[in-house]
Image (tube, rainbow over all chains, first blue to last red; front, side, top):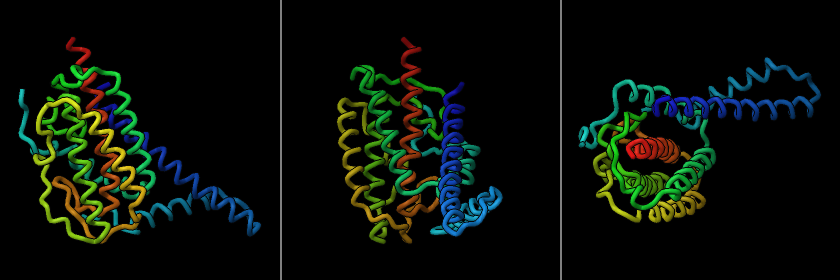
Length: 67
Length: 190
């Protein structure tokens, strides 16, 4: 494998791990909330919350596409 | 042996991947502490790679194949030259982060040519270790808020203090891959 491909595969791996980490953090928080207020855990809700967190992160504290 | 000029830049494809994909993703998924933790990890890997080699091996200049996000001029560096570049850039970026965090304008013009190593010299590994300790102390004391003030990277966006902090990791990672390419090329040339 060339050095460039090795670098790119590590970058992709890093972002997969980061996505997983953020999803895990959101899911843990969501699980705690469902336990505290006594509602059912829904994976679709966890997914929607994760999407919302990613969208918020893209525009706050700074628009990630700003240059 | 010289290939390209300092500051020639990256191929268009790499430039666009970094600008349109990598930087927005870093800004979305990194936090201050993720960037710092990853930076420390890269520094540890670099130190462990270089400590296994003699000073003579660290001074050997070899031409490596094209590596991601490294401009052609830097493909003929020795390991000590890469380390010197990391120290020069790291200290410059630290000054930029400090200024931006205080919402001060960083007026000095930053160029790629200006952060290239001055010479292929000995003793850069000790300087690198000293720089890592300096940066750790600096980061620990740094107020972690996004600055409104920005300083443009010569190739990419106008970065704020957080962007520069994330850049410290990405830059060190890219050069760690260059270091691995140099070590591999040196072994093959023997």
